[in-house]
Length: 472
Image (cartoon, rainbow, N blue to C red; front, side, top):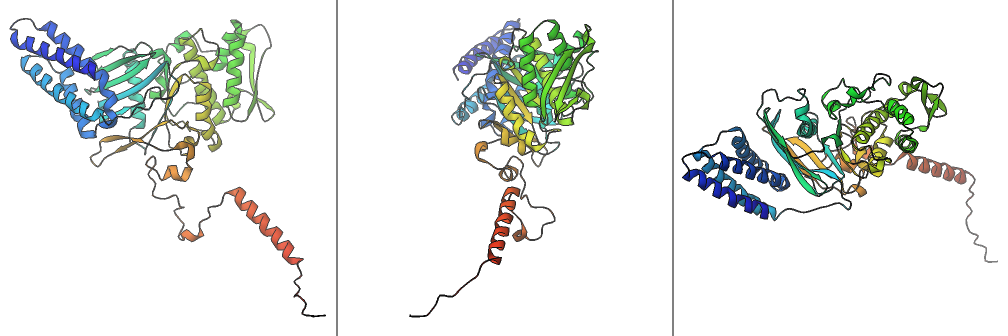
């Protein structure tokens, strides 16, 4: 808390100077704005230990400060309220538990505070240092997608008018760690925006609709300049085509990069045994790329929805991260932040389970923040995944609750009845007798039936004889 203490000492000095001055107070006001940024930079780390009422009170105070005008009276009130806030944060700080992961991420999100953002009146979350996988769950319309969009806004709002706030006066306070430096991004309403985050080209985001690939021949530099989070906000958006990227890499003779990405896609896509590439003529348009699935040669548009979804999303992600880091060869060298809404879309349960593990394995320098409705996805998440349940209270206010579950030692039924999903039971709605429920798995049922059949055969050939009483 040393930085905050020093900031408040300077804040008091500036406030005193304003009270004593009858002329220009512009310099002191700028000092207060700077000190408020120091406060904001430290604010998100306390989201875990503030209840909803405390958080809303503090955010409301900050918001009134940013949206309002300065005079002597308002500065005096601001100083007093910030002092009270500091005392509260110091009191709550003793409850904080640090939980850093083993490896350091070059760029990662550490905190987000949301005020008056669409239907979210006041909410916040804190993410431990270097957390590589963060999962949001909750019922429909509770705010999971809105939270992902708020993060996207924090990086890309100035670049497009597509993400406007419809006239709402909102406040987003967003902390990101780049290398060993903590930076802040603040969006205050529509007009006032400033940031110290300079690495937004390493942040990409995907909505639940991600099957549409751009035509390989229509992709150009202008497409690449589209916002990296565009797909999260627009269902009709198309993703960059990895096949076109392969062709460009071929012209550049980047064979090592081509092979690295090819092997990655083969491991990530269910049922794909190989990706074949070959030039039929000297024209780039005739560079053929086909996929071997169960022994059959297919074009990308002939792939199953699951394979196509992974090809589209991972392909787009690779293109954008390579564009931001052109010196990298292997995918595991790429750093960034990836937001994915409904990670499980179009995937069979087997691959819902495998995908999180594969993402962490092949992109160790990327922080993934995902939402999901599937308990199966949690079976593939790393044990140190940070879990949040998004819900609403009786007044309709968004609540973000951090959930602690031992993911390495949990079954789907336990996940479903935990605070992540909140189901009272997992019985079929038509079941009337709990005694009739079967808890056996299919292999266990087959093993039991085989044992019963063997026992039946043996009993048919079994002859029982009483022992003889003959003493002779």
